[in-house]
Image (cartoon, rainbow, N blue to C red):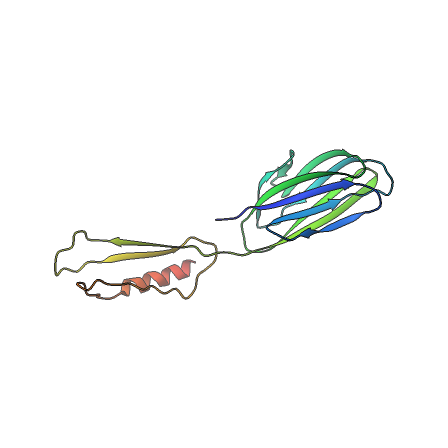
Length: 192
C-alpha cells in the first residue's frame, strides 16, 4: 500500500530576505518558497508552481491548486501578499516507484521576484507476504493421498529473498514431498 506524502508550500512577502529555506525533516515534508522584498510593500501576482517528480502521482491540492498531468505540475495563483504575510498551500502525492524523488517549487511575483525550493524524499519498497493453504480433497479417505496447495504471494513492491516455508504435519499423516512447491517457487521468483 502506498503512503501519501504531504507537502506544504509557503509563499511569504516581507522585508529583508530573499531565498529558499531548506525542507524540514519528518513524514510530512515542508517545502518553503519565500518571496521577500527589500521594502515594506506587497508582493503582487504571486503564483506557485510545484513540479512533481517522475515516480510520484498527484493526489490532492489545497486552495484551488490545479494539477496538470502533462507537465506534472500543480499551480496556485495566490494574488497579492501584504508585507510579512504568508500563503500556505499543500499537496498530497503518492509515491509510485522507489528511489530518490525531488519535489521542486517555484514562487514568482511581479517585478521579477522569483525563488525556488526543493524537498527530497527517499522512497523504499516494502514486501507484503500473504499465504493461502487449500486442501484439494475434502474429506480425505483413510490411507488415501491428498494434496495441500500452499500459495505464498508477495503483493508488495519489493522482492523478498531467503523465504523459508515450514509445515507441521499432524502425527497421523505422512509427508510425501514438496516437489510441486519448489517448481512453483522458482516460477514466482522469475516473475517478481
